[in-house]
Length: 131
Image (cartoon, rainbow, N blue to C red; front, side, top):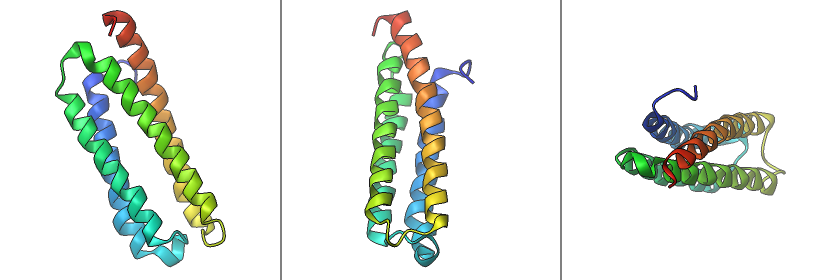
């Protein structure tokens, strides 16, 4: 996976962010009772990935010598988003169901794996380009 074209990670991350925003802002809201996460929290969690997608698509269009810095940036943002998701889950501990926990933990696991790969590629690119 580390051998994929570095720019493609911005597309993967951006498309994943759009999918996450859709699932959180539409699907989970529609089935709020099933997941137990209040729609107000879901809308906040759904809005942030839309900004991440904009960042990803902007970064995708940048020059090769800046890719390492942009990949490192989105990796950090992704990890902060995971922390926020965990905070929301514990904040709504009284209402969140096992299905809500399962969804959030699976999403967090996927995002953390992607962030680790992005950090590895970013480190390699920064060492190669010095930027």
